[in-house]
Image (cartoon, rainbow, N blue to C red; front, side, top):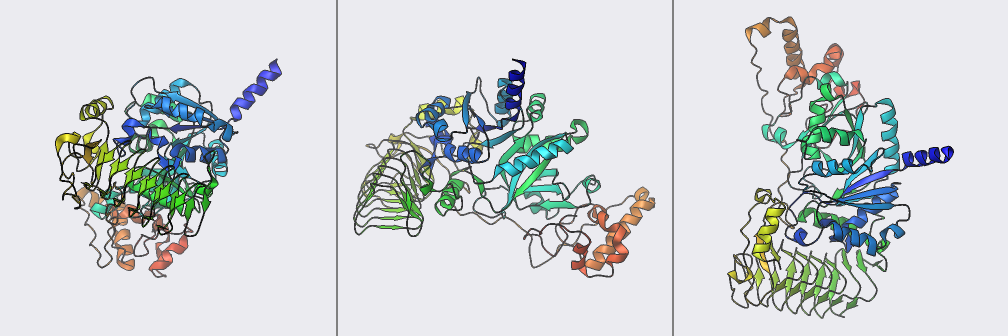
Length: 596
């Protein structure tokens, strides 16, 4: 009996666990997520949760807790009816429903900790991640690091992605400072500030932590974390930590002397990991899946039971039972589900059609995502939009770029929907009630309008103008329609919206360094004078005057001070020869050693 108990304890201790947060605590897919959980939204005709759980199962995870704040019954029903546990034979799945209102990731993890199911190190991942990263070696490295540094509570996974890359969400630019020797995270903050001010400020304490300081602006945070159980205890003790990135990481780093906890970063290379934050990244990740960047998580892997996708020329995927007219055109990376049909003269370009979709004659579908049983009648046009289950677009109607049509919405014949408008079958009263219950923050979305009933405006039939022209611009759908105009959301998070490149240094000119204002007491201090003279000498010798200089010039050059006489024998590019840093990011200008 005693031996059996020891074996059971040993087995429990070695089970690799994961926590999946089904709620992203974001309003980017409203009003669709009023009616369904985000993790069940199809991406390339496969629910998001399938990609996340396949990724975890492939990484050796054996037990998963899916935490839901809303729509928990729907998630649990999907897990049961899809026989997910049977298909992922190595995975035990538990669905945890929130016992109270959760408004943040911090609240959710406090409830997970109160549940008591986490017994050892675990993988924390949002339910909207698509990744093919091999977790096993990263988890092994995390555990080995924990043996040498028992205060380590988290290893976060990041990958190198240029700041202006389409995979990033709007405003996603982070400044990450790491120790070059160990990968320990020393600073994590919003990178836009340093870009706006054209300088980089680093605390002097960072230069005492390591001889090789790595400063990154090109790291994309995948939000995949390997955590120690102590992290949950820290969240219980700090109730003001709500968001992991805005609160927890800076909190642990800023209170290192008091908490004594450390965090590390693993930079992945040659593998794919991205989140579906908003409609823009929904489009980006879908395109990556269709173009096979996420292999083996591609359509012809047929993750769902009964799927029969085959990849054809030009990355066009078709299931069995698809009906294509002889003179229709399907081009670009596209996917067409079983039972879908495309009529005479219709064109489908870089789009996804769900099962049972009916595309009429002369229809144009461009870079759009149609879920199950969507009907597009003769002569209609759909551009850069998401159409949920059961949507009907009648003859001659135009769905402009960036629209999101909720389940069951009907667009009347001849109507043109405004670009970036979002429609739902929910009434305005229901929408207001849901917004109050979920404590939605209207400031989280840009360029929005108040909810309007379908009868609020009656556009003239046959209107075919763009957004703001005829159709339902400025109002709801026509009187005979089924749908309510929720909001018009035009911004960088919308699909097919113009996004400016991330701000960066100006290549044609260098800004003058700021002069330090030293008081009389400081000037009399021998050490201050020595450091100022050293900084001035290096600056003059190597012309290191860029917008990335620190406010305290001496702190920028402190690691080079012992070798200054030797450095003066070489040109500027030879400075890098005194250490062996990893390959520098492409964005760093003027050959400045970026690890200083």
